[in-house]
Length: 187
Image (tube, rainbow, N blue to C red; front, side, top):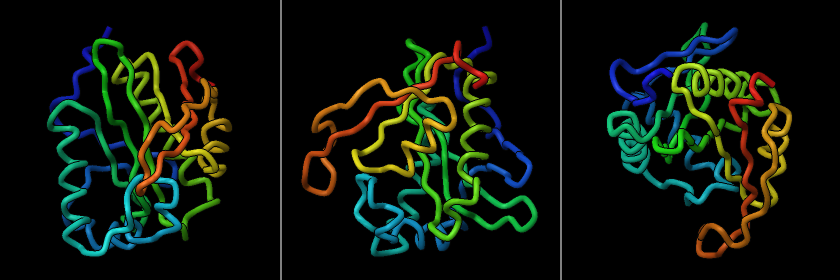
């Protein structure tokens, strides 16, 4: 089994249309546009950001996931132009169980173009083949049909509904738990 510790040089993943690369502070302007958009954040626990500093702070948190061996978050960029479209990655890494949680968001002008499917498939492959995860989990707020369809289309199975699982903008919300197992991959 390969060592599944997250250390060393930040991994860059290339797909047909995308490059998934390390986040930088230079991404703050475009990510602030997405992270301040109530449509993009509708089903996330974040309040829309109101300052560029909040985006810089979030980038720092996401960059530290990798440094602290807790996960990895990539900037999703267009291969030809380098334009940042959103982010995706892993967090809540549990090494003793070889399990991790997946998360993502995309600027709404890029929805329904297959971009998140392309990025999701790339990081799932990386998670199972390079990191040697056994289970990749996704927690999706009740009502987030766009995300549940994405997961189901890409082989994730519904484990169940977690009642009032997360405090989201001052109220408890139900979340679906989805997972994909290494034994089910490739889908």
